[in-house]
Length: 144
Image 1 (cartoon, rainbow, N blue to C red):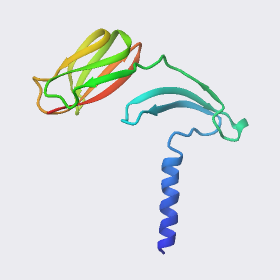
Image 2: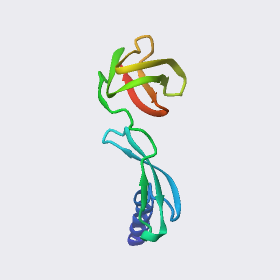
Image 3: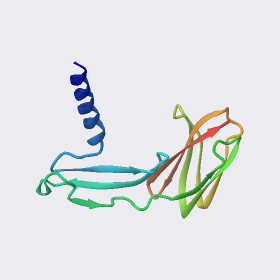
């Protein structure tokens, strides 16, 4: 009985993890890549053609380069913090939301460094969404 449970749990784990971003044969879709901290770094449009035996055959980048962050400091914060980007933002739409999705601040920014102030809000976790050239990038910030 324990052996059967082990085999079933192994198969369930393999199905969930091993197939997490695989596409069915002869379909196309969006596949995401993440860095070690969980931030999305790449979004690709991928086609899975049957000619290659189920492997990904045609890959093309469907988006412009996502903004690369060099620093989000300080995090956790007591109020003010900044995000520094490698590539300059151009009229990027910035939205700060609480964990319930309620919009607390909205503004448009350009440049490499964006300053924020959460001092009027209670301690907790907040989302900062930066939408540059139509592509969203989301950061999690903790206010102490």
